[in-house]
Length: 266
Ligand SMILES: [Zn+2]
Image (cartoon, rainbow, N blue to C red; front, side):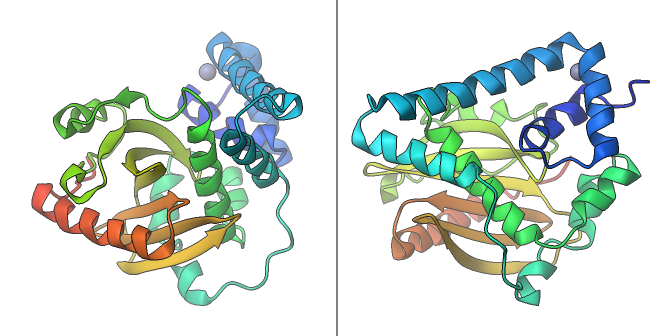
């Protein structure tokens, strides 16, 4: 019997392709796919994207920068090395209400799967993968506009939140557009900014019940990930920008977001 909604199936798509689902969840996912042509098509599209990335890397026809990014993407998609113990502060960032609200719609078995150790590591991987996927040609934005009044309303009805979309063009960080992405198997807003030739993805997703956390920086495969949370929302800025520039962007963004308006879960 098909017990998954299409939304849930879409969230399980990437983990299923990565072989990360536990058996009962994989069975439910397979059952849904057998019954749902739209989700089968989504899966085929994702497979085609992965194949396309691999063949582009094999042919070595892409410009140097792109080839590097694609190679990194493949590396990032590989199983992670055994992770060392995480400082409790970082783990605490994702416990409690954040999980409770994100998995409300999912089955209890899936909840067990999600609430395993290594959540920060897995989130870092999700963030970096999402950033690298966005750098594949034509995947950067769903709505391409330098106008915050075009980008912000685009998320209405697509996400259970309305992120602030400050335009920081005057400070050297022009808005490029926005995109719907998936992190922690839930939808997230991705706001895309540019700084010189660097792309910054700013991910925003609901994290109700999570204590506010000041920004903390992780580096992974040469990319910087700056994550913080505030007012029931989680934020992550991911870029190949160097640390001081990314931190400068974060401060500007947060200051302008407060002036702009606060994000409100709907
Ligand atoms: Zn479906």
